[in-house]
Image 1 (tube, helix red, strand yellow):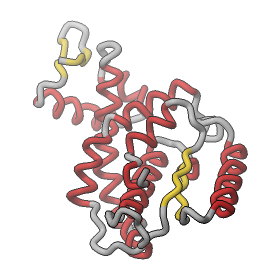
Image 2 (tube, helix red, strand yellow):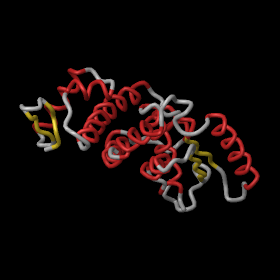
Image 3 (cartoon, rainbow, N blue to C red):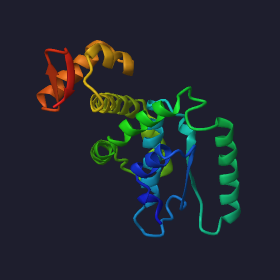
Image 4 (cartoon, one colour):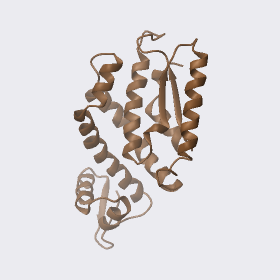
Length: 212
């Protein structure tokens, strides 16, 4: 299977299913077997997913993509052995990051809900004009893209997490703020936006927000 078909959803789903690390093997950049340059798509997804993992508090080193040819069996063994050792050193997912299993599951679930949105963002605002490894590295590691990603993802992730919590029970702004570690004013802003969109409603009796 072309590495370009390894969607963000596949990677996050693997972590959500309890995998401690995800390894992607791809063709050498510039040597795509399908003339689609799917390996560059894999590289872009790797950069994006690492940022997502880091943003939700998981070690981005739990994801690795290495490039090799079909004849590089020894190289594949070296790469996977080194990755396995690194993951064993990190321990089970969430342990070295200071999160319990429920917190890891919640954060991954909220991030997975944003995959369709992130696909659109990648197409419209995160396209690299030149297909070289240097261009992709400079693009995705630039301060401009880092700030753009943080602004876009932080906002959507907070709303996604709020929606998941409200799906369990109505909650006040203060409780949402405490559960998510967000500023109460930011929670109020998210609630006002979501209310205008018809996603949530405010119950004046309990003084809590609930899903509409």
